Image (cartoon, rainbow, N blue to C red; front, top):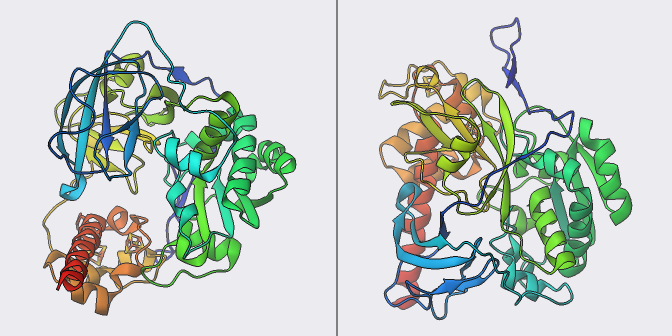
Length: 429
Ligand code: SF4
Ligand code: SF4
């Protein structure tokens, strides 16, 4: 990560996104012995798929009656367990473990002309995790689609690699997305150095190419909405609320290759960021344990090292090497014990660095006090909790080592839960 600091103490530090000048060879991780897939629904007894069931590569696995969530098997094999899994902030998932068979068999249920219905029915769990349901809300039609050839965090090069290495698939996916969504306007958002590669995409698909600045957090949706579309997202709104939907280049490539090859893609591309900050592009089946990637890329971990899913600003720590690659895992970062920045329970010293760097101009030092104290309503009503665009810069610069961003994320998650429960109660009253 390149950090440019100014001579003037009060100027903000500048963090530049990774630049991928050449097209590196991605390391292909062997198919693992076992994969684990996370369904975004809490475990329920008597699922439709049972332990001992045989599954094929690309097969859609729906677990619960009346629930539209599904996963796609990334391998051929036998289901060995279906169990509850608790993720970040206590979110509930169902974990499906599959032992991999020697011979691979491809499921053939996915075929036919591109349509939104078919995409929603089969492609929600593909690499890049496309938000296809956002295209189908009649109350919020999508008029603009933005396909991003830049990653959301620093040090990673997953989506630039996809633009360079899978140009045709991105191209196909962009055309299909435009058609099935009925969008008036499609934008390919690229860093300047990728414009030439992106030209092959934009030119063929009749989409508009737009440059994204190389300074973090220019690639976050809130900033792109403002810079590219001149739309300021009101507090708490999502881009979909303003008729805009974002997809990664990898999500577009998955959709493109799925319809042209009549196979649901199951291999995720991600950036492995090693302890010495060197990066490797890898390709692994969804559900592959991170340990397998480490083994294939000569990464060893020791007591106190940290494994982060995602980049340095917004990534989330995981505590086991058997944690599996998911459809949205764009990077895995390993930090050596000595480089792990310690979080502390030291109090805020009012230095103001978080306030100065916050792109949403929030009084972060005040906001975090209310979040820490569990005063979530006050944090939202008086200190702009929902104006936070989740860039993580405040945590990065905090001299007291406070986990500022984590407090903010937890506050949003808890308040969303409280408000949803209250709404449900009112509806049932
Ligand atoms: S994460 Fe921190 S710096 Fe970024 S927008 Fe939110 S409060 Fe501001
Ligand atoms: S950067 Fe940390 S110590 Fe400084 S004002 Fe913000 S929360 Fe307080």
